[in-house]
Each structure stands twice: as C-alpha cells, then as structure tokens.
Length: 423
Image (cartoon, rainbow, N blue to C red; front, side, top):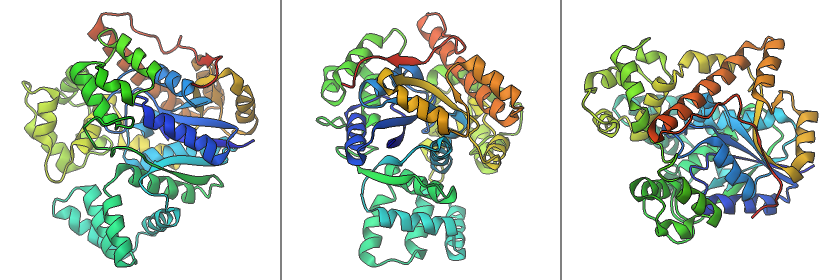
C-alpha cells in the first residue's frame, strides 16, 4: 500500500493546503494521504482559530484520508522538535512510503546537504553560531549566518540559500530531512513547491494567500468577502457561521491564566521549554498587570528575541510545558501512541494497515488509550497523552467562557468518520 504522510497545522485550512494535498496524492500516486496535525495550539505560540476536530474535518473533506494528532509537546515546540515529532510519528507507523512537505524549492539535494551539515555541526559552525548569539542576534538569523559562512558551497548556491533560509517552510523542510536521517527512516522525502504568497505575507492575494494573512483578516473583520477566493467554499461557509459563536479564539483570551502564573510562578521560568535565563529575567522584568497580551509581547520583544520566540515561550508557561519533559520524551525514542482524530470511511483499509504495522497503539477512544498505556506501564506515554487532554480542556473551557456556550468534554469527543468522497 502506497501511503503519503503530511505534517500540518491547518490554521485555518485554505486553498494552499488543498493544493498541497492534491499534489501530494498525484505526485506520489498515493493510495492514501495521512496527515499529522497539531491539536488546539500552534507552533507559532498561538491557539488555533478553532478546535482540532473541526480542522481535521476540513482536511478530510478536502484531500486527507486520515488525521492523527501531533502531541502538544512537539506541536508547540521549535522547528527542530516540531519536525522530529511529526516524522517520528510517521516513522513508527511502519507503513508510510513518503512524506510530502511544502517548500520554496524542490532541490532536494541542496536541502539534504544543509541537513547533513547541521547534523554534523562542525566546530567552525558552532563557534560562529555562539559568537552571533552572544552579539544579540536572533537564533534563526544567527544560524543562517553560520551556515552561509562555514558550509562549503559556491557563491551562486550561497546567494540562493541566503534567501531560502529566511523562509519557515525551508527551515521546516531541512528539519524534516534531519529527522529522517537521524531515525534512519526509509520514508522518502518529497518537496512540494509552495505556490502563491509567502508564509509571512500579511496581505491577501487571489487564490493562494498565507494563513497569516487569512487569520489577520478574520480576526480583524470576520469572514469577509475578501476571504472567499482564498478558502474552499465549505471552509468559508463554516468560518462565517462560526464567527462570534465559538470562534475566533486568541491568546488574549488565555491571558488571565498566564497573568496568574506570572504573578506567582510555580517554578523558575528557565524550567519551561524555550526560556533561557536572560529571556526569563526579561519576561518578569517588563511584565505589567495593565498590559494586554499584545502589549506584553511587544515589550519583551528585542533584536535577539523574535515575536514568535516570545509567543512560544509564553505559551509553554501557560501550558506548563517544561524542558525536562521534552528531554525525557526525546530520550524515550518513541511517540508512544498515535491518536486518530478523523478518517474517511472509504479509508478503512488504511486503518487496518496502521493497526497491522504500527509499533505504537492507534488510539481511537481516549479512555481505551489511557487504559492501554496504563496496562503497558508506559509512564512517558501517559504523561504525553494527559498533557494533551489538559491542554484540550483549557482550550475548550476558554472558548466556553468567551462565548457563553457549554464546554466540550475531551473524553466524550469521538473521532470523525466521513462517508463522502473528497471535494
């Protein structure tokens, strides 16, 4: 069976995502497409516009055959951990033929060369990287500079790579390749050339716009007609109906919880993932109770710390995601389980294939999954899954408080099974 994996967030699902799923299927001649998708919180340090179940339903309707949740520990981490978590999940299923990912170039040999260079981390690279960081340069920029100045390449290649290393999709592509190499995985990497506006572009454009631009428009004005050309019709309709009823949700809605933690932290801020001593001190020194969330992030931001880095650090405080947990989980060499969120009824053969070959349990019912991990005495798996449950409860309680609706119960949410074919 030919199965292609895709790692995504879909916040929200847009035309570019539909294009990638179509390209992944046709380009790899896949029998089935399996998506590894973030839960309710994103890698950029923000909550999803709406919950994981509705986003999974969009993916199923527009090209995916099954959606598995990426645990929040990895889904909210830096590009390296995010990519490793997604790839390791696919790898441990033992039936994935290839992984398709969006990228600004299709030159796989160049991407692999950079990935191999970063795995080796020559002394010259490490020294220059540390030197740049000590000068207050942000990590993404410092790493790009160190690669360009120490990796052997001709001037033409260096010129092109300098532009690409500023693109989040290229950075993730390199991390996917690093993860595949480190795991000695047989999964074949397949770059999908990104089309339309850039990842960071905040302006809407015809047909293909970035998720950043779409979120900005939706948060500012709701589901305006300007969003119609850039979203599948059913997604546009669903977003329009949901607006003001149970979406959108932003970090501002979670800010009171974060403020309480910052008022009396349960542990040193350096215990949390992505927080150095310098950043921890900066967070506490600039915090003012009267700040909004956006004002707080702006106050912490500096040349060294990007908006995304700060947002991710604050999200880790909010969700109680700590360095020790990441170290323990990565040392375990396992993702422990694969939790299914949704699948297409016609994809039942895919589920049989997963259950036949996977070295980790395929969880379709939460209580059964917890019991199975308990019977296996898999403490690392239990910690990972319980963290996902706690974060989902926080998300749903926050949505319920903002919109005055009953909170969804994670234990009673069943997987989505869709009967119809793809749109």
